Length: 229
Ligand code: C5P
Image (cartoon, rainbow, N blue to C red; front, side, top):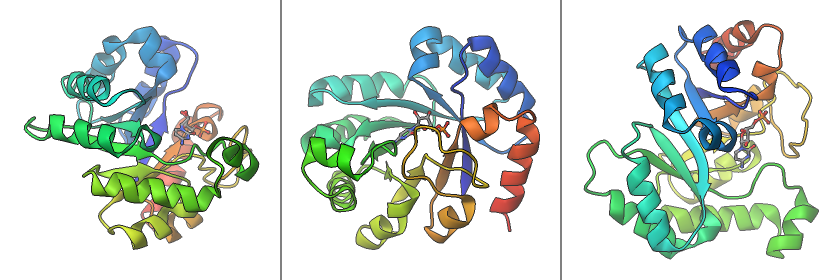
């Protein structure tokens, strides 16, 4: 299992300072809306300059018509990131079109599909999709799997069920991780490391428990030691 640290701090300088602090660790870094919208390619280049071995997950959750998504995917593949994501609810044609566009690109990034956002509880989810969250998340995952997408973003609660219904090698990445039971904030379907391990999660995403802590390095160290137990 890999640790992916969410760089969700308010400024470019804060994110860079955190990456510098963590530069010795074998971790992935997640660049999301806030920093990519503000800082663009500069943040990616700067992170690679800090440690060329950092793998970057560009969390832009594409959702648009198939051709526009494929165009965006092709541009993302030129940025040197290791992974990006799309929404599974954009549909199988869109996901297929993205994968088709990337198939001849050398070293194309891993593509994940978002099933249900971890900030949804059952009622929030039903209000939009009129279905039970677990059932629909599994359906989204199965849809993504048949399109050739490499894995899904899901809650740790669904990881094992998704693998059992697709393939063990179908990747799961789970936000909403509170490694040692920290405050959930706006996340509803949270899990700790023990649960993530039991659920065979491939990547845990951790944001606030790391960057809001007084000693991010210590937390990262503790998480990594725990992952290797
Ligand atoms: O601070 P916290 O650990 O809750 O951060 C979780 C990160 O994962 C945030 O950057 C959030 O945007 C992202 N994310 C999520 N739920 C998803 C997909 C991404 O929380 N389904």
